[in-house]
Image 1: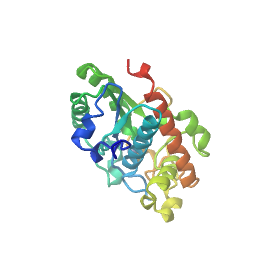
Image 2 (image 1 turned 135 degrees about the vertical axis):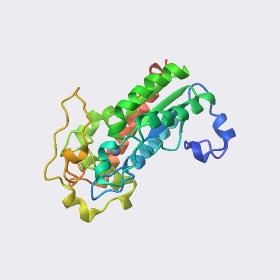
Image 3 (image 1 turned 90 degrees about the vertical axis):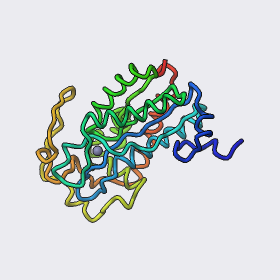
Image 4 (image 1 turned 180 degrees about the vertical axis):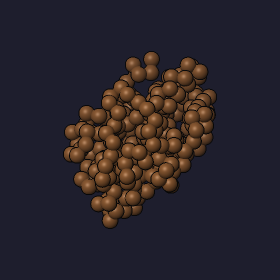
Length: 255
Ligand SMILES: [Zn+2]
């Protein structure tokens, strides 16, 4: 057994080691994120760290259960126009985002992989990732599944969180998970003033429109980060990755 058989990170493997895994059953997870403002108490890399951590944990669970899996480096830049007014935010436009995600997915498919998952970790990317999953599946002729981790884990997240039903923004959920995976990305002393004096309720289920965050919250946060803890974050990360590994292992998803 070679020393790198347990490795799931694409970029830590050689080209030959990657090609040795290029069989039709291998799941390639492409984490997709964003670098944007997360209030006064969290660094801008939150979505990147969380999408990467959940992708890597999911791939390890898949491998442990007998499904070979790889994780590409995180595509760190996404659609974050609605956060720009707070500073610290980098956004692509829709065409640039589609070109980036498409280029990576097409490359993966050209090397012989036949199960590609776009694992989204940013609210502003949800609709674009769903559309790209459809468009790329048609274009490449290989199933490309799009998934946003907290929407896929709504039941378990709702049971773990105390102050909100699911991920909002720089909230109980995101703050907890950053405490677990990247504690130096949290400014604990700023958590109290991160709580918004006002924030707009989300659009009703099924409804969507563009709305700048500056209209929705005075601090850049949606929700309340005060009940966050690293222990809660660890439970969220485990729940999300277990759910994803379960679903991505099902042959029906790819047939
Ligand atoms: Zn985000």
